[in-house]
Length: 353
Image (tube, rainbow, N blue to C red; front, top):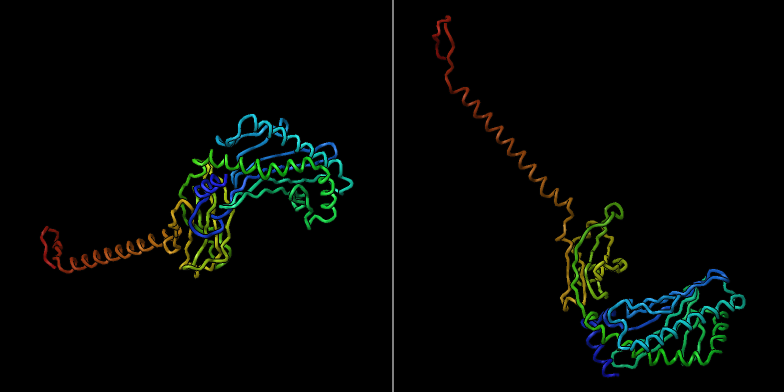
């Protein structure tokens, strides 16, 4: 198993620079969110994720897993997956019931949410690490270690009370320990093996620059757009030479319809300070060759229009003035050098002037 783990992680974890974005452990996690509306109404929602990629949904009514990728079954048999479905469904129902039964004792106020996250991490060359964490209203409540629940320091007295109740279910806790330390790593390795063709996919990003809404007089909002990249981890930064600009603001990484990703980063600068800035893009698909876009090479359409049209108008005006001057001068020369014939006494004869 360790040999398979080493091979898969070496192949699937993007290499390259020492940036943290590219050296994260591979994690498989299941998220269960229990929403409590009142004493009579509560609802569970579940999903499973391989890193940042959702691999499974969950039908809370039937307890069935929803396989979102062709390889989401990993290398587990249909029978084993059905067994895990039943186990997860029964656990989710019990999870709801425990909190409903202790609303008054734990001083829980409707409506509220409880989130459970459980799974395992694989580190290159190390044993897998299992984890289970529970949060109340987005704040840490307790975590699971060695068949026991331990309160979070942020959870206060409520966390201690919840742990006391959950630690009474010793058989369930032993089974949970086996799931995160044994079943989860095997399933994760199966996912990596079954989905390696898709997970190894590399799509190069495209990048371009623009300006955003003016932040104020004398300022520019420089925007660097990066789109069409896969996998998701990417590093984008506004630079001056080799110095990262700490004012760089990074937006959320958003999905494109083709499964790739989009990101934009912006920088608010004084207009006179824009010269010398560049946007640098680093991604595993680039083979160590960063994309660097220099602001000096970018000219907004309005400035390009002015830079081209205004000189043309001036040249056209100058050409028209020269033509008019030349025509007038030629006419005057012709007037004073050509003899004019005037009639005399109405006989059709004339004399030269």
